[in-house]
Amino acid sequence: MPHFIVEYSSNLHDQLDFQDLFTQLHEYVVSTGEFPLGGVRSRAIRCEDYRVADGREEFAFLNLNLKIGHGRPMELKQAVAEKVFAILCDWMKPVTDNSYCQISFEMTELDPVLKFNKNNIHPLFK
Image 1 (cartoon, rainbow, N blue to C red):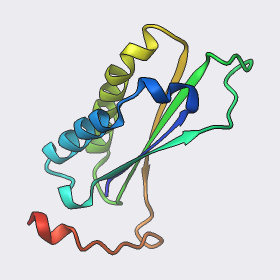
Image 2 (cartoon, rainbow, N blue to C red; image 1 turned 30 degrees about the horizontal axis):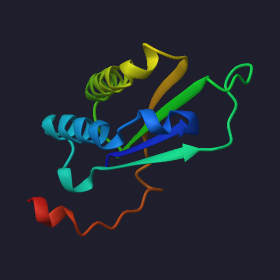
Image 3 (tube, one colour; image 1 turned 60 degrees about the horizontal axis):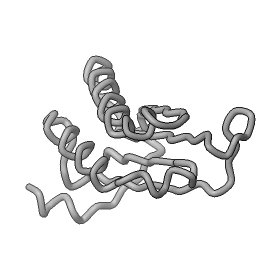
Image 4 (cartoon, rainbow, N blue to C red; image 1 turned 45 degrees about the horizontal axis):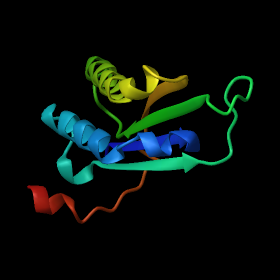
């Protein structure tokens, strides 16, 4: 943990460099000292079927969900959420300055009983 999951409208595909966004997000969360590098992962899911507002083809959306493990204090979660959203909005600025786009972000804290994980990458970064 954490996991960054981006869903975005396909009309944004040629305008976005997800590796740049993912680099920024990974570097930030690891810099807090609260998230181990070996558990951070990101992915982007292109949505071909979508509708935004009244259905105009030029309207776009991007939603980022950050899933984190249970147990961190609310103050940390809020600070991380605010910074992640700022990084996202800054990265999206070339799009939002020139076109219509809905940007949303949500942090989800996973249930400690119902979350299962097996990760053999962690030892590489200890």
